[in-house]
Image (cartoon, rainbow, N blue to C red):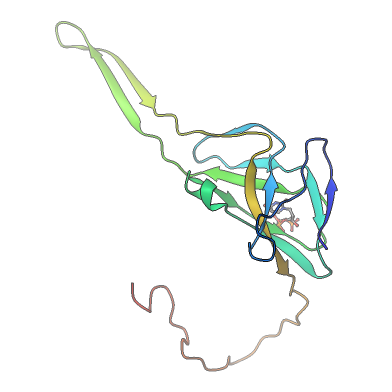
Length: 164
Ligand SMILES: O=c1ccn([C@H]2C[C@H](O)[C@@H](COP(=O)(O)OP(=O)(O)OP(=O)(O)O)O2)c(=O)[nH]1
C-alpha cells in the first residue's frame, strides 16, 4: 500500500496511468512557479508518503518534461521521511544572448545593450512534475573493510571502456 497524507487543500494523490506497468507514480505541483534557466527551484507537492516497510522512493524525470529541458536534482526520499516531498527542478535550457549596438550618424557607438532570449518554463498548479518509484532501502548492511574483492569480467574497467 502507498499511504499518502495530503498536507495542502490543493494537493493531489499520486496517479499512475498503467498500474503495474508504469515505473512511477506521477506527482503534482501545488504552486505556479517559473523556472529560470540554471536556477534550481524547490516545487511543492503538498504530500507526504509512506511505502511498504523498508521502502523509500526515488524521483525521476517525466520524459515530457525532460524534452522541454526541465530535469530534477536530488530525488531520494528516505523510507522514514514523513515531511512534504519537494521536487527540485532545474531548467537546463540555455538562453541565446544578442548584443545590440546603436551608432550615431558618424558611426560612433551610442548605446549597447544585451538581450537574453526567454527560455523560462512555467509550471502551473496541478501540473504533473515528476515521477516517483519505490526503492528498497538496503542500508542496514554491515560495512566492512576488505583487502580483496571477488573477480569479475569487468574488473576495474569503466568510463567508456566498452567502446562508444
Ligand atoms: O528531491 C528531494 C530529495 C529529498 N527530499 C526529502 C526526503 C529525504 O528523505 C530528505 C533528505 O534528503 P537527502 O538525504 O537526499 O538530503 P540531505 O541533504 O543528505 O539531508 P539529510 O542530512 O537530512 O539526510 O529530504 C525531498 O523532499 N525531495
